[in-house]
Length: 119
Image 1: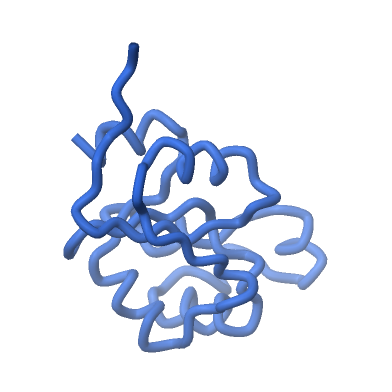
Image 2: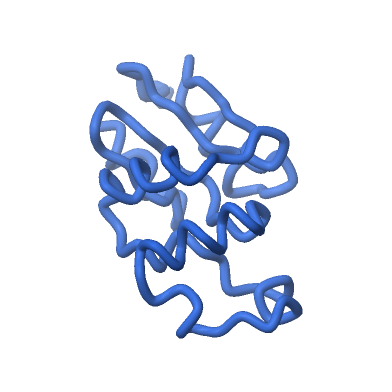
């Protein structure tokens, strides 16, 4: 039997329509789950998240059909300030899931990153 990782006050920024995000929520017992599409992060919260993110700031922005439909390109998300501006205006472009534990954060893709982050 596989044990579920335990938490030290883990927050997961979650999109319930995303299977990878649902897997992260299922894998981390007791996490605080924030549905970021219903409760978007404001600019100060995004700046703090970027300060503790162990991934490049630009990786926090999804490059999907919505990104393209908005006419956005790599030059629009090249700096942390630009990432904040884009995600404040378009929270649906935030990568998911994002896990925060203490003063560390990761993007939980691929799903194997969640287990190593929780170890």
